[in-house]
Image 1 (cartoon, rainbow over the protein chains, first blue to last red):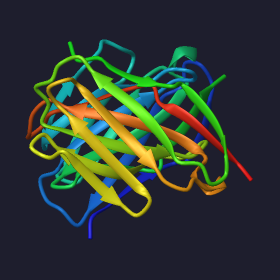
Image 2: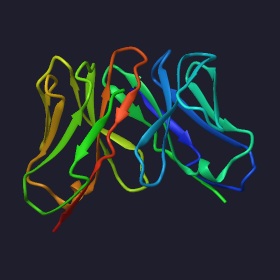
Image 3: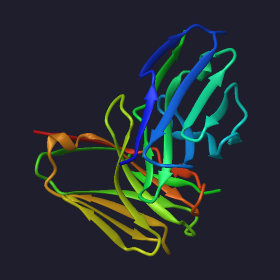
Image 4: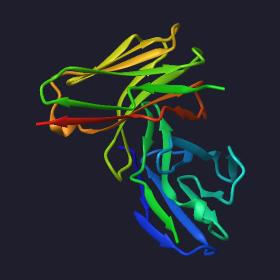
Length: 110
Length: 113
């Protein structure tokens, strides 16, 4: 069966520090992968999606970037975090039964 | 641009009640619609997926309907329980392949014992 792993679960980082969040999928090949962010009191916003290795599409301009170095690995990064980057980050993949989401990373920038 | 609206934003009911959560979307040319549940501080759990050619899907006490032409979906929860307390999110995909999901802001449900 397919599973999606996301880590870390929580993260507190100072303003200006770098960020790396990792997501991996098991049990499937060539998945479509997505990063979403959920800010307090707001809906889920799509940040990036990837249809294959090295292929990244960005939905909104921002302080973040994404990379897909391997088929089942999707990484969200930032060189210098801003306070506004705080939020709940969710990785997802799309299969025949719709979308499956990871357990999320709660990022607090202080 | 696809917009998804969920009504009500919050709902509080006593245990045992049957309830209906509503979702509407502006572009009826959807590929499928998915209902999720989110517990506080947790990720999203998929509840039901309805393809555009389907009218409804059922899983246990949950039943989701889809009226694509009118841009509406409802999630029916029978005999609600305190464990059903969570935020329920509706999301639509416009096409297959790499189509992204557009989410509503959710309905926060509280079922009291």
